[in-house]
Length: 207
Ligand SMILES: [Fe+2]
Image 1: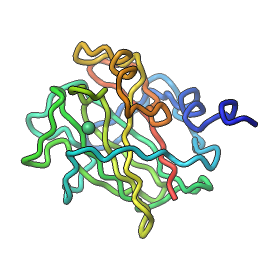
Image 2 (image 1 turned 90 degrees about the horizontal axis):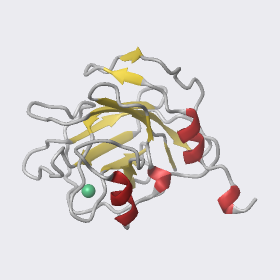
Image 3 (image 1 turned 45 degrees about the vertical axis):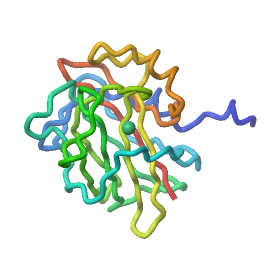
Image 4 (image 1 turned 180 degrees about the vertical axis):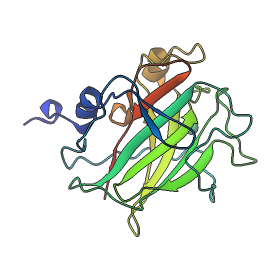
């Protein structure tokens, strides 16, 4: 079928995976209202698109799933998902290295604040506890990530947020519209804002 008519992984995820879960700092899950998706959300061999690395990547980030370290403020984001092969097999021990701006739109290039790497478990799942990044000049809010299966190629990409994200008084619809690097296929499936916390889901499909 024509490319534009093909149900993409992203649209599938957006409709099926907006589960409202809350992650504690320790990484345990607590059911809220919506049921969790029970089946993998990888539906075709459409791999996650790459995006620019940008100027702020730093090697040797600490291994951690929680970027809400001392002094970090902002709207909390619990991001969860899986890493899959193109054939939708979960990849265990895949590397995910996240880095992002803080709630003021600033990258810390001196220490490793708002940076961390982790590995998927046996199910291919990952969890990231962080805060929503603020926009900065020229860029809509986004989270950078590198994803790599053991001995596989590195996928460098960015995650984006839907237009209805509410944080820091941002007009995300306008910011998304103006950002030349925005890729809707890398938009997270965002749950409702509960208190000061969003939950979101994104699955990576890599080679
Ligand atoms: Fe950036």
